[in-house]
Length: 153
Image (cartoon, rainbow, N blue to C red; front, top):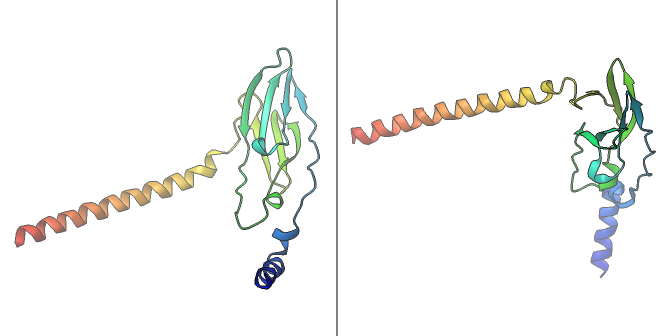
């Protein structure tokens, strides 16, 4: 029993954030209305980082976009890692969305697409394609060398 208490004390001292971390409830973000469409940022965990667009006349959802994704590290208290949308406003014909980390992103008001999103995944895609091509070439070369070695014996 003493060993367990000592272990808990050591873990608490080494990881005080995980032992005592509790964040405040995020402030509600007022919905933005623009040309008959209401844009909302839900505060529930399932829709963290999402923006939804609803047509005012019918109440139907036009689109929902995950503006950013929050990666949760298992070893750290979950609630201190949450990042909610802190403000939204229409600016220059786009929906400007800011989060609690200070990151700003622009969304197309009609489609919900993130402006400049291509630049985020394109480098990773290109790196993966180059890696796959290099691995394929190494595999071809090794199999050719193996066939030659088998033929020589």
